[in-house]
Image (cartoon, rainbow, N blue to C red; front, top):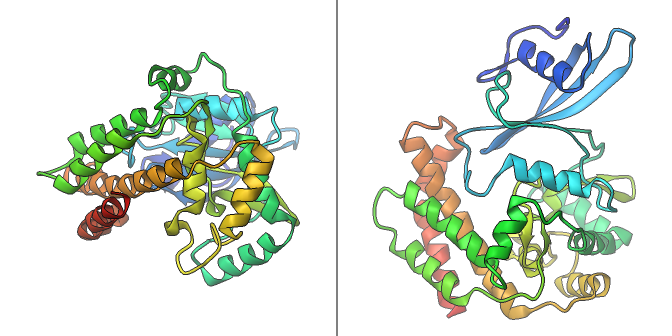
Amino acid sequence: MTDTAGSHDLLPGLSRAALTECVANQLNIDDFRLESVRVAGQGMSDDTLLVDGHDGEGNVHNAVVRRYKPNGLMREFSDPARQFATLTALADTPVPAPRPLWFDPDDTLLGGASIGMERVEGFTPVPWSPSGQEFLRKAGEGPLGRHFSRLLAQIHAVNLPSTTSATSDSRRYGRRPATLLIDKLQAVLDTSRSGPEPVLSDALGWLRANAPETDELVLVHGDYRTGNLMFSDDRIAGVLDWEFAQPGDPMQDVAWVLAASNRVGSDLACYMVAPEQFVADYEEFSGRSVSWPAVRFWQVYYQVFNAMCWVNASHLVQAGLSTDLRMLRWSYTLPTMRQLVSDALEEAK
């Protein structure tokens, strides 16, 4: 096995030689030659790499490798085994998700659990950039605006195997699947706070008291927004980042699409479509009505979730579990996040 791209480290704890061996083993290629590697994303809970290579007969092999960080952000919510099961369930559906190639729960070569996926070609706009917002606005004026809503309805129509742990967990909570997520938020707070957090504790109490009932469990993406879509020509070529996906209330995704934090400075939901048009299209394609009390609950939930990200980031840095400067910067803005949660609670009460 030859590593034509060299042997120096790509990321902390990850060498080119180790990545070459991992891909060769997982794809069962005897003579895999690594040609290029691009770090597509250094997330706070995982790293994503684009791998290009060929075998001894000249056959091309491309893959996306996602390496999970043991001390990643909000690890309570991000389970690679659940993500692999979700991607497997999506493989034969109309939803253009990456097709999974392998899952290794304890990859000693890469230094953490890894998922291999087929590559989805396309362009992912940066929603908060001027160019990204202009692209999304124009795309939303055409058929892609309705496609955006139809895709979410298609995600909510996917049947997940009842044997998955995520499905079993959600069913234990009956008609209030939000309680499962609130328990996870509580666990993050319990392990991350360095002192009393009265605002966040109050928020968790409010969420428990107001968790909505739902008559159906659907596959919820958990972070469905234009920043997690890939576009190619006149179509949405891929839906990415399924780490938060699990069975739950469909209004959770609807609320996130409509959230003000996904359209800062814009009147368009996710910078792409008018909110009323998104709602009308989603109701048409899904065959269900939007529950506005549930939407309002989930929008408060996401504000609390975002604040918990800040609390968890501060803990990881202070405990020496992360040296990510982005997390260090977040620790300085935690008071702002607490205030946003307080404002959201006052508006909801």
